[in-house]
Image (cartoon, rainbow, N blue to C red; front, side, top):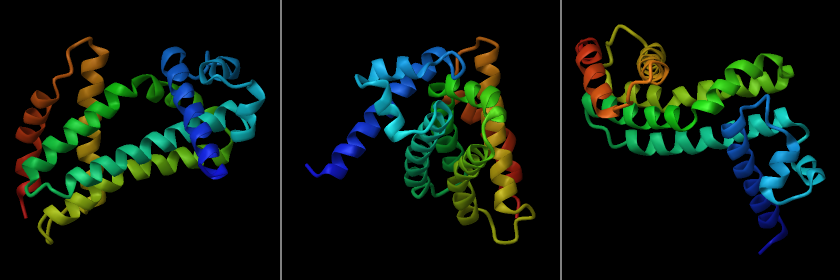
Length: 194
């Protein structure tokens, strides 16, 4: 194994440990000592890979976002109708939201205090999360559709996030198939107009 591969493996191990600590404790309560212990490395090793807890957190968000974007893009390439698009989007975005609820909460509360360069990286992540939806809608919507794909994507993703978050907040079960059917009923008539 090359030295570069060893570096990437160690980085991945640290990110996995950080995810466990951040999702268990939240960003504010998480300590670099806890992450180092969970990763099985010395605390100083963390700083060889990440300059701060904030930078480690944003790097984790970037890693998980890229995994999600790759998965969603692959699935949406095979969507042949707006109905399939809605069901795939709800399933994958809903799973992402449920799985990463603590990370999302930490991001909302902590990122405003981050340095500007890290805030910019988080903003870029939010845009990256929209890209697969924009690409799919650009392909599936009629060319003369009155709402541009970026705006339509923001509305669809916002609806998914709001409904899933509402279920979590109110302690209701998150049944993604039911949510997809409800959103299809509400959104499909508008998306189908050309």
